[in-house]
Structures are given as structure tokens and as C-alpha cells.
Amino acid sequence: MKKELPPDTAALPRPVTDSHCHLDATTELSGLTTADALARAAAAGITRIVQVGCDVESSRFAVETAAAYEQVIATVA
Figure 1 (cartoon, rainbow, N blue to C red):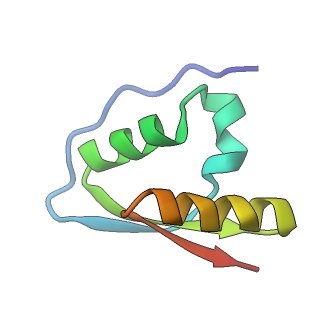
Figure 2: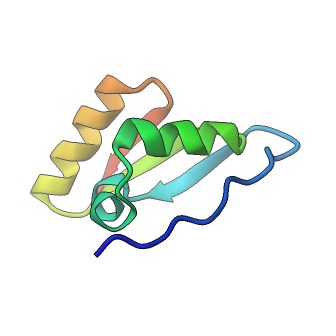
């Protein structure tokens, strides 16, 4: 079930790193592609995102996403 997204927010006063993110887990709820989610984050001043993998599948997603997008860093647990 797709939820309504909050409105865009004003950019933060300084660049920020999101130190724990699950882009793969939220796509179904938000309806945003990874590229769209990263664009919304960048517009809000979030310039780096740490994509966390919790199992083999999500860890692969984290590594593939970090390889595809310069602003994403992968971590696996």
C-alpha cells in the first residue's frame, strides 16, 4: 500500500549525511524509485546516504546501489 508522501522540505543549512537508510525497504511504501528518493534527499541537503544491508538480498542491493550512485555508501550487517 503506497502512502502519501510528505511535502518537499527546505534544504538544510549544511550538507548532511544520512547514516542509516533502507531505500530498498521503503520503495514499495513510497512509490519512489531509488533515483527519485536520492533526488528528494539531495533537494533537502542530504548529500550522502549510507544504505544498510541486513541480509544477503539487501546487502547485494546496498552494494549495487553504491556502485550506481556516487552519493550512496554501502554497509552490510
